[in-house]
Length: 67
Ligand SMILES: [Zn+2]
Image (cartoon, rainbow, N blue to C red; front, side, top):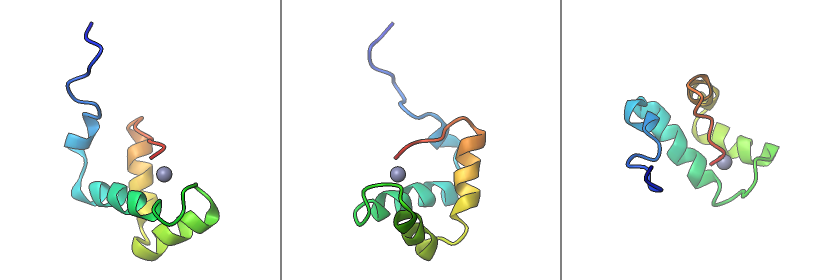
């Protein structure tokens, strides 16, 4: 067993671009809000009103990340 995995998050290779976008938006919003407070999700919502669909997409694939 290698202590390094070749692909850390293989699901990302299968993710639609919109989901990748969501992850990027999520990360950018963390520059303003470091936690997952209501204020944080408000920021995400402003940029990407349909973010819940993408969040759900990740969750359904067991890939919910606490980014
Ligand atoms: Zn996060």
